[in-house]
Image (cartoon, rainbow, N blue to C red; front, top):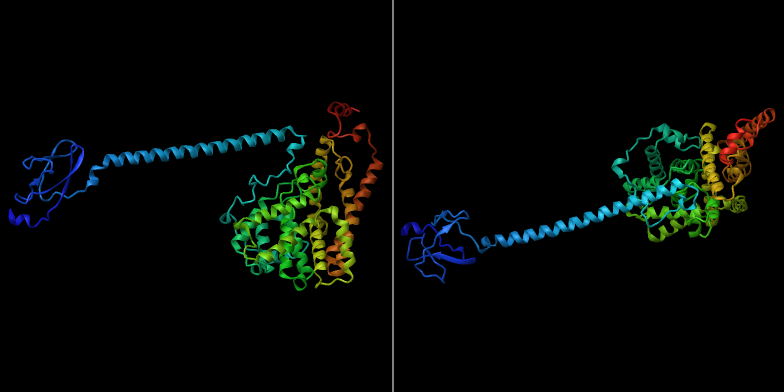
Length: 492
């Protein structure tokens, strides 16, 4: 016995005695498997150990030691149960919050749909943009879903020309083209842009253009591509700074962000939220600027994140100046200012350069007729569709209707002839004084387009003279005539 006990170290075992933890140890006077009872018991007390099922457990020197924690199992179970209950309660509360949020979203959607279906009321004007509702702004897609396209050399060369056909490209392809322009002009390097941030920014830009007939993302791409083309055609890299290039391109990309499809005249006459917010002063253009810098305020979309704060302040002001210049209400003022400077233009004069940049973005914004007829003409249809949507709305709301937007008065030739003759050609011919190289590629196509529409108008006029209206229906349309009267005229 003595020799066997020496191979086992003395150990203390903890027992649960009447619900209390008691410590027992080996009896030095007895074999190693003899245990002294707890102090409060007689030393002759017999100690038996049983498992939870009541079976006897052998007490011998090989029994593993334990600790007082062994008897806290019920306490631990209670603690775990309580914590689980608390966590379940939190999950339930969070779940209820999510349900409530979804319910509110659904209610809002139903309300919007109901208001839209009623029509006619100004409250459902889609131009009412709430800065606090988190509308779009952050791109819904992330970079992995933005496929990278390898542009062919043919595409790269075509991108630099006003003849580029913008109708053959999907949105992702247009995004890749815009991305290429920023790299090609050296803007990514100049502003130390993170290439992934540039992708995210372009995605956010695309998703903040609405699906209007005309003022949509494809129009944004058109204007930006024309700006890129004019930079190359006029050799602006040699005359302006890279910062100026970045301002021109970024203003072009952002110039119609979140356009609602109804122009400033409608906003002001209908007293929309945008008109009230901006005191009737270029409501849409101010809104485009605000959305542009909302997007840039997101760290993941801020392509100017690595620009010095003071430099960014100047870039921001310059971009705002250019976007505000796209309000056609200021066309005469801006063009007159440029005419006064163009004969003695000084590229070292900041005021001259700012005026030039304003004219350049104006040229790009309304440059569709510079493009080949097969590219330009579909844009006229898109613009007239948007105009007619507005004039129909204005009629239903009792607001003034511009004749050039009235579907009962305007035709494609009449819509284009005056605009080309009195707006486009004078502006581009003024720019031509500073950059003679645009005459053949940009100004001559405008003259050809004017001649094309004048020929169409002559044909229309001749047809009208040869075929005078045979009944009163010629003078009415479903949009302006009560249904019962319109149906009556069909039979005359």
